[in-house]
Length: 250
Image (cartoon, rainbow, N blue to C red; front, side, top):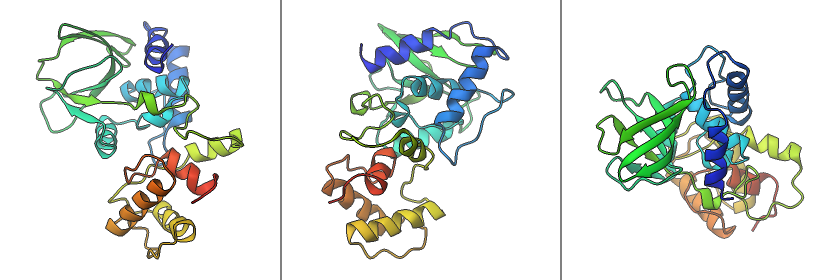
């Protein structure tokens, strides 16, 4: 069974889940387990459409290919940073993450997983749809569709990391890696300073330890990724963190 099928089949098992139920609590717990360390920690009282999508990937050990945030705009931002975003006029595939804008403002306010595209009529599974998990039918021409995030299903090993060779990594180490934030150009934090220190040590760089993910840090990340034969995108996610902190280095 493909990872796409696993995600969709898992989502289907939650159809009919209502807000406040045990399954709803399970969704929130799964999201909180997989969320980035800088992401909002969900409660049972929060809007949970993003949490549902993230939870399905966490349940299938594929949190590495989905932006683990609780807000639609943050997820969209990350898909764009990864180069895995397509606009509403693009071809739609099963497994795409669909984002909506009901209010016509500048922000997205709902999200779901595309489970069928039948001649332009989409079937989508969504959490927090009228306070439950359910199906939506919508035409690909609907102006309320913002666009689609495209998880890298082929790039995941199904173990929460897209690293191809992770022998010897303990579950404790994997859990630690999962707490680290996604870093990309423009970020400013102590985690960027840690990244710069590691790149200086392992990559032979001479970066200022200023905590600012600027052009020099971006280029250093890409050079490190290329040297270690991992995806060269200039974004520091689970794969790059794993190489920097645990695996052998070039």
